[in-house]
Length: 75
Image 1 (cartoon, rainbow, N blue to C red):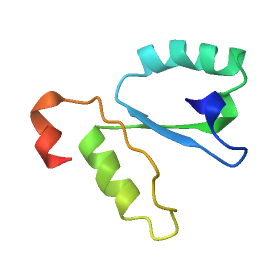
Image 2 (image 1 turned 30 degrees about the vertical axis):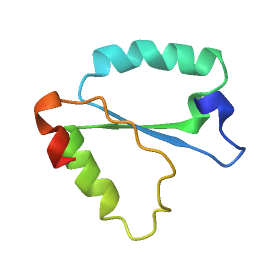
Image 3 (image 1 turned 180 degrees about the vertical axis):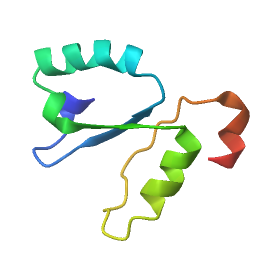
Image 4 (image 1 turned 135 degrees about the horizontal axis):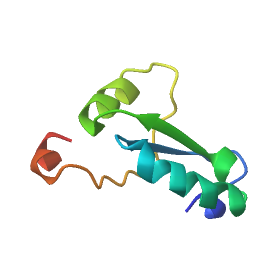
């Protein structure tokens, strides 16, 4: 997805496990997409609240949530 974004596009990715994302970052950088991904750590619900409270953030064009299934209705 990051490679298909326009020049000024960015992906905000959230995860709670650096073990998986450290491996993923290798691939992001290998294909030249590392600068287009803003990785944030913490529970998804906390990240949703944090991101939605930032007044200066542009609205999201697309949201994909693959988090704890029990909280889907809360997102």
